Image 1 (spheres, rainbow, N blue to C red):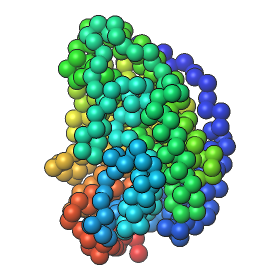
Image 2 (cartoon, rainbow, N blue to C red):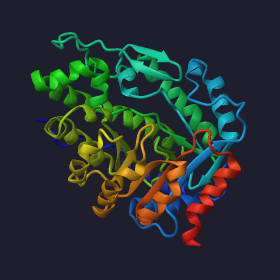
Image 3 (tube, rainbow, N blue to C red):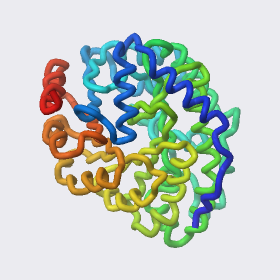
Length: 377
């Protein structure tokens, strides 16, 4: 079993919250209406939205501008910054979407910071499997100050914050959940076997990684906030105080006992220590665990992602139960289903993250947003 005893709190949490709330009071160059929009986001966390649900959607106005993370430019921070600014300047935002630039290493950033071997594949990264079957070669669970990824992270966070002042919000990288870090370190088949044969090794690793996650979280939020720049996580939601996206994509491969015994207590601990946590429920395979999430009062909100080619409308009963249990809900929804979904869920605690793809231009996206808002005029 996982030991969820208290860990020293983030020493600057109250100050971070003060900076966030103050930042939310001022218009931004790329979002003159930011104070009103930030207030709507804050109301969403309390399920007290008035009018339409939150709608987060964006589309490029210039397809010639290269999109994506631009990972190939990470070793040249100034060029990376220029490329990301070019993306921001040619992005058409709709509804409650916020202008943001994300310092981004790809998924499961925490494994990189711990020194695991990393492959760059197209516009993403993947940590190589390296822990042997007996765990005898598991590295020391630490972030070393001379780790080049750790040092570059600090530089990119500072550079982004300098450019963001008065213009846009900073967006954090994804640290990834402990289970997903271990998934990359061991591989899916091997980690599933470990749950059966060596659960004590997993429990020890979860405990050892927690303070490392703590250190990573303190940097990705602390760096921009120390410079007075408001910060959001990759789900695009504003909050007047820091929050964490809780992740365990591995959970679709395991049963309830393993998830609730080995990983859920750690996720609840992360949410408790930060104060707000939104769980990233990744697709129909992970949805089997949603009731267990709702039994953890520390988990503030739920984000549901349907997965490629799946209709979100087939999961209405689950989404309604999440709302009935008092949780604000963010749903990644295909553009063609956004209007119908907005009519079938409670708007007071609903956020629609509209997946536009290549189907809509700025004019079409504006029309979609107007259709969502019609009942509230």
